[in-house]
Image 1 (cartoon, one colour):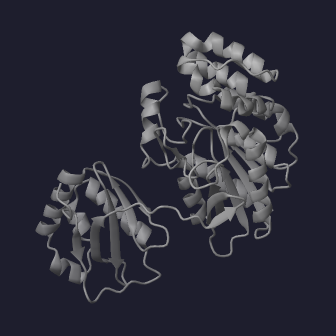
Image 2 (tube, rainbow, N blue to C red):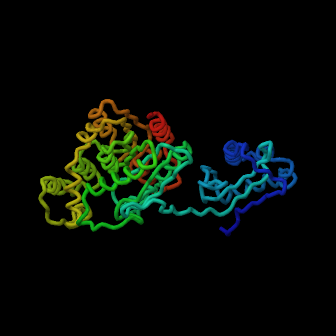
Image 3 (cartoon, rainbow, N blue to C red):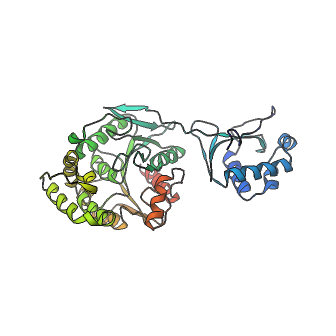
Length: 400
């Protein structure tokens, strides 16, 4: 594919970009007309100068060429702090710019190369680095806490996890005028490293508490949203007088119980040995480092962290919260089940429970079949399940 093949520029001196222009509607129409191959409908969107520069025949040719090289247009989302859009096609992702006149007619169209910008560290506290999105005038902020393993502030990791799920949630909050802070856990991304042998679950909680206290200096209300393992971290940190707590795919039982269930599926030949090792660790006794596939979970330097993590029972901890609680769980999550969410709800009867049909552990639409479900873990452009933010945003806005 030649570089610049998709660059299409129709820029006219008479273009007038105005604040009242309805760009979201124009983008939605363009996506629909393009995908349905309706060149005449797209042509009718043009203003006089655009029609003179790009005839119906040329518009038809443009759509055909783009479709053959890029495929269907799956999604179009605004690029933050820019007057442009990220256009995700089946085969390529491009940067889209549109220009509307006073009558909301299309007078300029530009497709070019898209480059994902790296998040800047605009928050650093005690060696923890994060990204704060602060819409003007926002009085509410959500602290996102990532899940287990080397998962970074965006919901990605070097172990093949490319989801952008946390980043997408933060950007959705921004559109609703709600601030957010997402951060790299200690030892992940750009945050300071702590030796694995010295790491304890309480370190994660302490970092979250420090960030909450910092945010309370600038915002009237701080909310905590923890995903997966981060849900338990957030649950413990939310005792720091926050406005509300959100559990997203959070376990309903202690870590050892959850791990036993997962290992019965993923490592059935080693599940019995793993169960014996966890019994010892939970009682505070180190175990001999195993070989083979269990080494990743039970090597010597990780055992102190495992012991510190297992002692917390989410059902007991959620009972201690005296704040509004929202529990969200997907029905096709192959790591945490709807039973976990039900256990949390039973322990905290006044919490709001939402089960999202067809949402998996990374908060995207996915079937229950394991391989197809797992395939979504490496498709970062897949959108969040729509119901997710439709629950989180009202929860945050409704608290006074």
